[in-house]
Length: 121
Ligand SMILES: [Zn+2]
Image 1 (cartoon, rainbow, N blue to C red):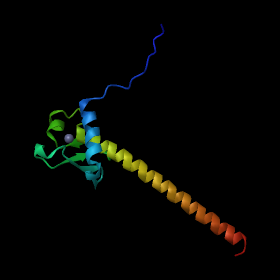
Image 2: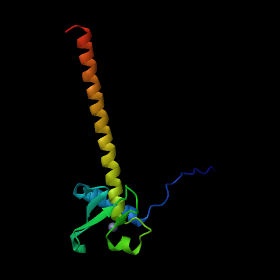
Image 3: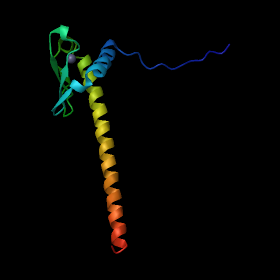
Image 4: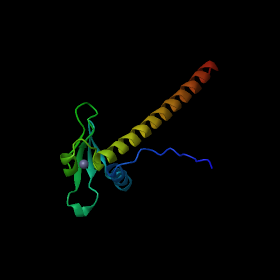
């Protein structure tokens, strides 16, 4: 009997899963403070802490978060860093799509103007 092998993606870490969960629950509460720095809500109100500051180091340096997990394991991306990374990827691609749509709309206007000018209107 033949065996069918299915390639599995690399196992995800608990931090990645918790970051994804945090993004799903609180994406609309993640705020960009500028220069790759974001404020991220905590997972639950019972943890006592409202928000965390995440720096994605998009202008160099090392990414950081001021939570306990990242302080104790700076080699790992904590759930806040994962959530912000997802947020940034999603908002960046949305901004690119919107900019491309605006470019296409401008091109259409210019083409219409050119055809009107060519028609002597
Ligand atoms: Zn963190």
